[in-house]
Length: 376
Ligand code: MG
Image 1 (cartoon, rainbow, N blue to C red):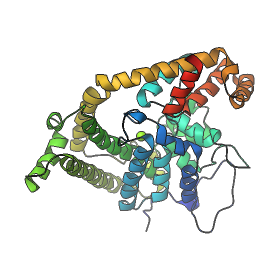
Image 2: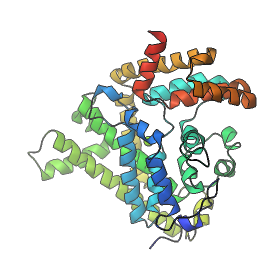
Image 3: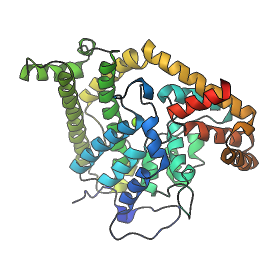
Image 4: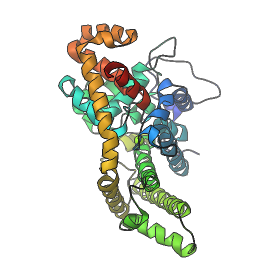
């Protein structure tokens, strides 16, 4: 039984290009399946999460990150009687617009795009599913439901929201997205906090000893050591992390359900019109989570070794952008054609946007190779 305030595929606000319903799959299942079969989804395998793809075979990539997010999102959705398929679809698509080389690539492309309206990766994820995927005879993009698109667009500036029609409205009206969308944001955070600890330790950039200063980690770690005093190495890390994940999910479930009950939420409209998000950690967990995030920022994301890896990435993105904006003849013919079209509508901003599409779509290694072809 679904909750009364869950998203319902039979009451979907629909697709841009109307399609006949299917007998054996719901509209949200169909969204998820289209995402899995997309080109952009396969590219996630070769895009950096934190560690550049070729640094080691065991680190998370955007693809394994997205699968972990989907796993956590499905668990939460099932426990709360929400629509699992919709949550899974949003989770699998949430990073489709990410550039190569993780945050560094992101920041670099953003800097390049500053004079031309900026670059937002959430907006780019939406652009991938709305426009850039080219697989279907009747339309560009994947023609996903409003509900999936709304979930993919996690943040958006007011300036851009105005151009987006239906999915942009909530940023202007300050309303909330569905609970399925809300929970994916948190599943994303639960996934990366924990897998970044795991990858961080594996890489040797952070240590268990350092992490013992972080309360959330220390508490679960001492539980593990109490139960298994002789345990060592990777098993300790994994046993600790699975407890943290479980604790965060449990906290989120209980606290959110309480918010829903206390606010007498009866319909999806109630969810949308509520003054803030109903999916929330308890106050205590919020603080623990903040401390953990700060630790990761200071000790891992800004670690000089990570910075070295990503600094080169920045040069690559910047170099590619500059060379293409100055001479579009260096682009593959398909993009040259797109530039001609985009320039007619949007001038130089249109041209920059096509170049950003090309660069954002690259995998790490494709970007590196392309840079070599042009500069070496
Ligand atoms: Mg993510």
